[in-house]
Image (cartoon, rainbow over all chains, first blue to last red):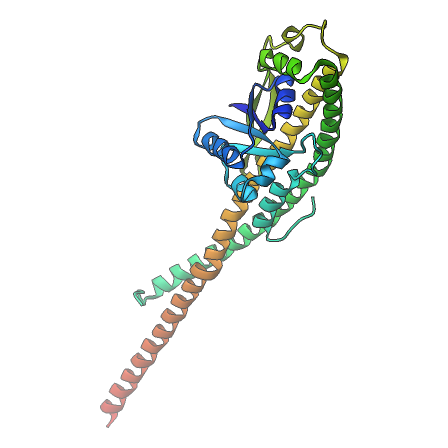
Length: 106
Length: 206
């Protein structure tokens, strides 16, 4: 089954990903726009790997909740150029907490 | 309570109770194994996330140097002309009967990086940044695979938890209650029967 890779980040980071060969990049500033993009892909038929910068992910209200409930989109967060600490483990931690019932250090 | 008070029904319910208790114990075993599988899967995540962050940092450093040399508009111009080279291919594998995804980063045929920009007028920092980002993408896909696997296992674990709860708090108590009721009624009927016989015998003797 084929899937797509998309990037949701600031303009500079999107430029870098485009240069590396990831064509679908969304340069966003407004967290609501980022949420809309994720929800739009969730309604689609293609499986999507969404790479989201930490800065944008952390500005989306209830991002972990959203990430856990997405079926067609797997969101992965990464630190942007400003070096904000990665939150990539937060979604994983939330999934594990819900499944097992306690928090696990990752 | 609408239960048939017969010995046949009692035997049937006892058999059902045995099956329900066996099913509960098997599901509890599967729940434990799945929880362990989730923990073992996420233990691989930390290393990959660290690797992703290190590679990204290097890519950003080279990118900043390329930006300083070529200018932001120059890089943007190249980025617009760069064709899409990567997509993912999703396979499936089964862990404890749960279907989990396997992500593979696939490079489109003919999507050569070199073809998208000339070596003249670009800097080696750009090559380094792009090459490092390609490596980062591979790691990101593996991190995504772990997240999707944990998600699938967690969903199955939730299902098992609900089934165990239903068996433990609804099905098994109801079966026990029905069994107790039938046993009580059968004993009562037996006592009534004995009493009637004794009374008939007593009347015949007097």
